[in-house]
Length: 549
Image (cartoon, rainbow, N blue to C red; front, side, top):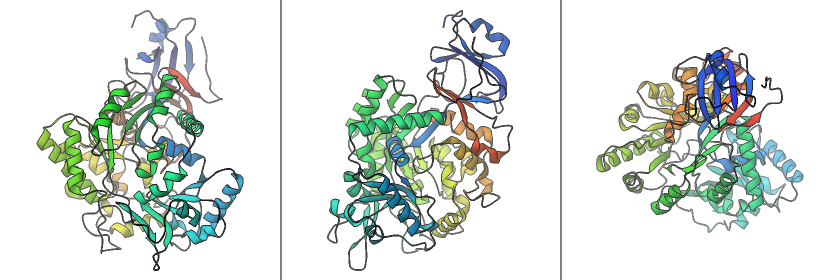
């Protein structure tokens, strides 16, 4: 940089969290083009201020690096924002009423799509069936995603369109639930969901563009400047649209940096072609992702020991352990980062075993492989993350159970395994690197909710008051770094992103309160005042107080 070059912006606050130390400090930040040119006391910034420099003073409001969501699904999340949201339904009847009202408001929609129902919240605690939807919507196809996204509730019209009947066979690692007469009940698990979404997700180019632009607008308003968009199962494959992302990138319309991880399978040549094709600062293919197991509530997560409330099963893996290991060893050999969805302790162990085997065969390298979710871990496997250099990619907002959901969750795993649920501090203390995201739309995109959850481990309903496994709470500096620097490292971009340092890209956020100075319960309500991505303001709250020179 030319030393006398004038800054485009100078931002100052009494509370700047650079990420390099554990507390905020008073500082000013000079931004030239898309990079941080200087950080220091106000009086040192005068040399950067010219007639066109915009100078923003933020008093005690917190300035920090932009949030980096390490695990989400952009288009699926955007779709959820324009679909019927069912998390608040307290009964099957209430959910159906919501769906009907939504359908009436969208008479032109070919499919009625919904998200986030949970029968453990309902008065009867029972899985629903297609007949209940058929009574109110017999002629329009309906698909409603469970809150965890690993099973759906559909009506008979949707089953007919998807050609699912009593003779339909289960796809590999998928289940078409059937009653005692072998008739489909309307619940589809795992890969069976794709039988319906292949029809329901047939969206026009215009709608996909709108969905993506809505996502970018939403993320900017929440201070999210980088994301990792991961392969999201066969059910989401029709929403995978790298060419659309590339078009927006070339048009200068990406206001968040996108790091893509397509599916891990036998076809690594396609992955390498994608990696070579998408290499801009805003759009990169950084790795591959695959599922090892499913979810605990559906008994599709893979456990070391059987389920406590269903001892005849320990769950299963998506593909055979031998296939998983073969895929991982080959991808690792070709220098590709691997990210594995593993929720049960059996799936976590298999993931670590596979990474261990790959390391022994291919040699140790800076691979930055990740295990996604790590909801339940066997105590014997905790130290293996650090030893193998594997990142624990976790989503704190998944801890936001209400009391009913928490009891339902614990009933699956039993009390012996309960202390090892979302064992964030045990992993951190063992030397493991944690990186945080939301799994949006499974949880909301707002980083403030995840920060609060990681600090308190208290559920949506304020229970338990001491938090779920309170011994696993983390400190605020740790949590903020897990939402900024750790994801940057996990994306091989820690030299450019994740902290506020001279020479790094100007991706930052200003919050309306200093997180270090407020009661923890207020963190959920903190809002973004300004979001800057690549040196440009991409979101600005109307009440912005500024002095412009």
